[in-house]
Image (tube, rainbow, N blue to C red):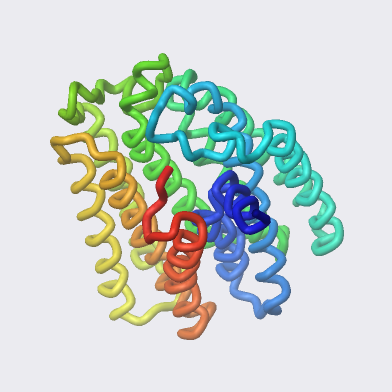
Length: 331
């Protein structure tokens, strides 16, 4: 019974995808180029993890009425009643409180700048959760949330950030923007019925029977955003914002190409299949993130790069098995 309840809370906070949110401030802290303790990185990961719990638990609270209309989402903890709405709201408030408390405990010397950054981060996430499916292009709110969550890591180390740190934060922002937009594709079937206006629906994406109709305007939009992401990836090499070996540039191309493959795969599906869409989106997110460890190689070394590359994969696999008994989320 206890284990079942724990798994329900894991699903509520979407723990399986929390690793990338947790690593966002870790990566910008590393991009400063200073020698930091393992404790510092673990503390940043915990703060990023709490931002994730806040964002996605609040999202579940706000979307409960819409989720109840979809048979595909019947296993969600708030839908099936395994977690009460009161407890879910308690987790949201607890996450917010812990972010501020731990900021004072871990980074007291930088609190004057980290507290405002946390407030902005939380506010942007809240705006997205409340208006995400009704406000045009609300995806930019959650993308900006990730930008500030990433900057939290940099400012935990120094009050003066170089351009390279901002590039890493922008990469986190654009990656989140793209993934959040294409993630809306998996919900097109029930969002459209309940009047939800996600970006895909606003741009003409529809499900008719089993046919998955992705509009040309939506494809063009995503391709343009992906070009921005790729441009940010190669900018540190072109502008020489970091020290690097020539082979690093070519290594970075590999995850870019693989990520593009999965993005194209989801955009060219002809039959609506929520599970296949979710799988393609997940692979795109993992491989898009892998460019960052290679960019940071000169700062974190080979061991650090290996950890950043494989930790998300291992984390995702372990928590998916714990939560759903397979390497694929059921909701």
